[in-house]
Image 1 (cartoon, rainbow, N blue to C red):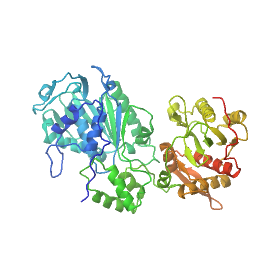
Image 2: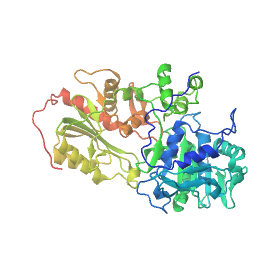
Image 3: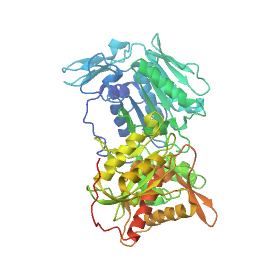
Image 4: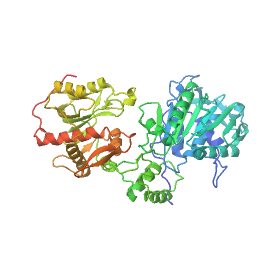
Length: 544
């Protein structure tokens, strides 16, 4: 029997955290079921890692602060099947209900947390070291445990009930079918899409289970937002757990993953994208990576389950066991082939390059991709913080910031020796006209992607050069931009007459906008080489 690998060096804690919380969990939350039901629980390495990150304390935290005392406002945990997400989620809910999860100042050394001071007679105590953050329970904990259905919520609520009944928390909690009473005034409420009446309560914590299934259609996107607002108003926080989501559904999990917020802890172990889930040996390597820290998992059993599901639904198997966010139908360009070409490197200023640009206005994204004369493709950066030249309108109030895009193009033109820019005109005719005036019509070319013959040829050029090892003097490679990789994986080929195709999304919710400038940049490079312009003849400098 092959077990999941032990935790590696990635699980290193070099920050202040409420160590009292995982210690409290292991002494108050017994194993809920199985042959060892009722025995002391020991957190698996990945569970401990996520726990200490959720309760990571800011070094400048001051006594009296609630949520602002913590480094992370909320957490997202994306893990494959059978890792123990449900029971672990139950321990976090119970800790929020009765454990020392509220920052209570910094220890001088020797201070002691005693359960007896908080209504629990189990006799457990914890002694703080000097400089360690201390914790105290919420005085009136109101908590919501959320899932899409009653069956789904049972994945967390059932082990929670068992932990309470089999452990010392039975003294301070009374479990029921729809809620658990905590002390005299606290509650843990179960919320599903069929029972939304409790929304709006002044909660201090929300556990949102399987957010990969929360969408506008089932109204759970609104539920997630409402809960987070409610918790924020009380100084509380939230956590979401999920399997890898289907990117065609535009779920809450996906929007959290794509968020640029720096105060969201995200745990989503990933194997190299160059590994193919369809190959049994490579699938084994993927499982070994994503189940790291889950020493209880039998990888042989995981392989057997995955192999069977692969026969009828490969994408589901890859999501559930490979922890990869993949849609159901075949992609235009194999993501593993694209990932295999990743070879990030620094591109020096005034390197001779070509550019591809595709713009939108309010819904789709806008992006600039660049490629050097030797076939290295990358996303340029701009501004004082080196932001990537990819804009999601959702990050800017629903509309792409045209002025910012214009400034970024100016910086890119000034930084590199840009010999050719292929730009798709729709929605950006005025800006492209300005670029023609600024940089010259021999460099800025209006390249319409709606032309089926030309676009099909350009797509085939990029696809061919990614799949094969070399193209003449050019060997294609890229910077491993994660957004571009996601958009490449989302891209599908829609058949057109004469054995041609155009690119499309797998679903309206998916984005492929970084794919288009990648195609255009590579097409521009091919045309530049064919025209004999790859060798530098003179340098062009533009004002920023």
